[in-house]
Image (cartoon, rainbow, N blue to C red):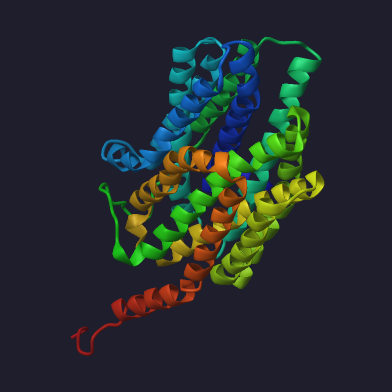
Length: 399
């Protein structure tokens, strides 16, 4: 990977752009709760609205394909990183409700459009054999970058007592410097296959869509309610939650590359079967756990399973028509975020009655995913059969 970075090739572009995203977003997120309370006097109502607004660009990620009518994917990725960095840099300058909503939406547009395009470019630029390994390495590097960001936040506030506006400007400014480096130092890479510039939804991708939706739904339960349970039920303070984040990123730094190689070795169906059985146990554990240390262990294990989402991406890479990847990445990102719009509010109401039911619903979703994942080899077989049929030259056609 280091050799690739020095060569300024496609892999280096993917890695450095991912570092930019991880650094700026981790810095933004690490400061957010303290900033909105201490500087903007937010209550639960305002932070809920801010988080909902943050998810809207993800839900609209399918619109990225229309921008590809006028600019290339690589250029759109760079513009998105620029918007992300500017949004983070400006956040500290607007410590009031409307200002924070505006900077959050600007940051989120950059973040979600980049994630959509980055997923597309990764599947186009990496061949099917190396994709699981390289995607795992990139997750590892992003985890290391997030750890560095947390360390920077601690240093800036503990040793230098900097203002929020200064720290946000530092993270956003670092992102802009990396953006200019990517813009100037890297050539414009040509894609081998011209991508569709329209929305593409195909019946043959149904399994990918279904697994993506269920993955997004489960992720929302983890993101919104698992951490909340730690605080409400077990009394974890901010330092405890920060420590859990650090443990998660350290574990992912070491395990994600190995998980990527493992997926490449055993195949997507077996990897996802392992993940979904594990998630059924984790969510069932959340529902009934009474010990704070066991809960913390479940939280870390749950986060490890995030890396196995690589298998859904590489499954799609194997069945997709090459020209569908860009459009389908936008569609899948929108499908993934349908849950982000629905679950926090609806399951929040359910939480008031039964937190156990919230996590058991997550276990049921994992069980549905487990059942669906058993069709992966069947769908791969259908695709290979179609490919072999398409590549067969009819007798006498050469004459």
